[in-house]
Length: 228
Length: 313
Image (cartoon, rainbow over all chains, first blue to last red; front, side, top):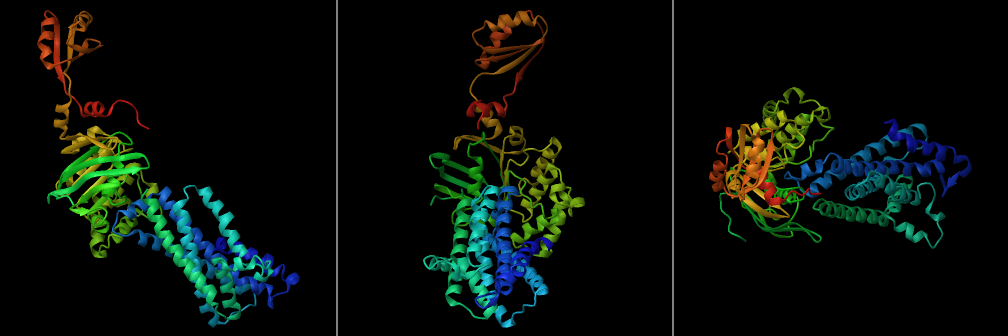
């Protein structure tokens, strides 16, 4: 549990508490409160991605257990769904753990009504990252490549989505593209849901559609790769 | 669709599998009857594993048809997978599950009822000598024990066909014989399709043997039939009480002797035809002989004669 909360908590202590005195309010919200939903979301989706990618890679390349599942009556889609659910569950549990710690050390509280709206973003978001993990775990054969993809693709996408700063900071020419990213839909939509209680339909549509496309791609890629 | 004999467990009709320009299987035909123990031999890269992957529905052929119990491997994957048990080349056990949990997972993947699978797992753990280690993780097992657990896992749902892809590779002789004994004990209950590099294994266990190379079937029949097909003459071992050097020189000059090897007081001669033996006996007139014996051809000789002596990558 310490390993799960250490990284997001460090970020929260460094930015949320350490920098709050310098930053003050961001779009009318205290900075500590501004970044809290993003850190919980980041923990959940990172855990979903990591569980899916490493579990699938390990079962495929080290234990060869994927082959033994595939000669039973379960279908490829069922194996992919199981891996996604596994990643997704890890994500939710770890996100919940970080949320408990952040709420324990800060005075911030959210109305329960906001929680449902927040979960409406977190659930497809975790599913999306879990699908991305399944795709990476299926396609990437070397563990160091998995680490590189996380460093070069996953983390930048998370940080670019306004985890620590408002989207209004982007130049006007870039902002429309950033707002189209599914990670932006996830982080910005989840923050709006938790902090203001509002539910962004465009962001949620983007996120659910991305999760559905990622699932279809995960099944297709998994089937194709393992038939080679 | 090709008409399939209802007694066929496996029917492969002109199956080709290509990886780019390489044909792993090239118009491959095969039929295995229900209840048969069948061995598929071939050098590395001959296409054995590709064929098993097609028959176990892990892969589709580029062209041709393959049927398991009359069902098309491309269309009836789920139904076929209910009928088959597979022992892959690797010990694909989950190292984070105990031996018993590995078997329970397999039972659940086959949707077996808990009541049924508990007793079946107990039975298999006992049978494979793993009952005392059922709560241990496979990482702590020897290679032979892991292999036995993989075989137990493949048998859990009582399959009609058992695919064994090099089941005894890497095992010590005792563990190998234990696996052989079990295969013999279940002979007749199910069809067994085995690939192996150990020719002795095929000879000991299987009713029929197929030899494949470069994706093609090059020989098919019982071990005795394949040996009988081996062209060439006979090999005799002649043991002398004394004077083997003199008679080695005499025999070496004879036209019908293809090859001659001297080892101490024993001379091994390869004759062009077995009819040459009378000429050899005449030439040995006056020799102080201890023994003349015919050396049986081995399946290995058949295998090498059909697939060549070159080492495959």
